[in-house]
Amino acid sequence: MDVLSSESASNIAAKELVTRSVISGYPVRFDFIEDVTCITYIEFDPKKTFRRTTTIVEELKNRSTLVPTSPSGTVYKHVNVWVGDKGAGLPTSIRSGLIEFRVEKSWIKDENINQSLITLQRYDEDWQPLYTEIDREDNNYIYFKAKTPGYSFFAITEYTGQSGNEEENRGITLGGLGGNIEKGNRIKNPMGTARIFMAVSLPLFMILVGYCLFKKKI
Image (cartoon, rainbow, N blue to C red; front, top):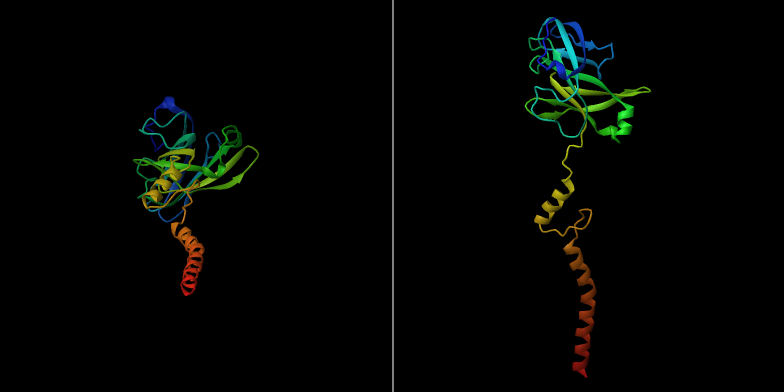
């Protein structure tokens, strides 16, 4: 085996290994047909040749022992993906990286998850959300595909992308620009109010002036 994991063995719930030849310019796909983890396959276009390469997927019990922080959002699974031991899965070695994973429908239902927000996140000095889309489904799972610049530490999450204060912050910003904020962040238009006032008061003013002139003539 040409790949070694640094993950604590006590944190690994399941794992699967697949070996393929990795040759520059020839797209390669690793299918995990044993179905023991939530990862179904990975594929990428190698920039370098590594020849016989083993990829290992580790489905974890908790966040990786090698990662210092947790991703934002509700976490479904933490996963490690190691491609060889010579850097075959690094961003400098691949292009067009793809990873397919599956999520149990029962988890989506039980946790009241918005499936359109399910996102694969990758850790590289910080957690980064990856472009993720629904690929297919069967009776028990929904399958997703995500684009990735490299392979390392991943988390499958329901990712909203915000702390929940976006609307409040937007209101503060607009208020700072002099607008009056209504509920729902709609801004009242002071110029529109002024125009209405002028439209009503000007005719009354003209009538008053006319009356005064009429009185003078008398």
